[in-house]
Length: 117
Image (tube, rainbow, N blue to C red; front, side):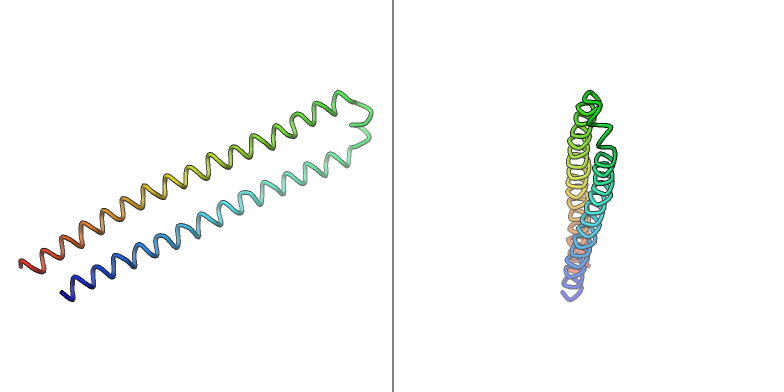
């Protein structure tokens, strides 16, 4: 029975470290992705104010620029939301069920090995 409790504890320990490092990696990757994106975003914003008198004299360029500016912001927001969030969301559940099934199988296996042999 001590072997069974050891494997049960090992199962919980592996799952804990998996959750911990996965969410750590997910948080940092997601956070720094948005961080670099907003650096580029503010650089773009600074670019707009730096060339403000060109925009003032060319209204067509002004509306053209605003359209692509907000379109750029919207598209990249959707890109980061759907690609990174849902990709890591489904990746997380895939590896969660895979690891849970794997260690659950081996804990049951070692339990029967200890009892019957």
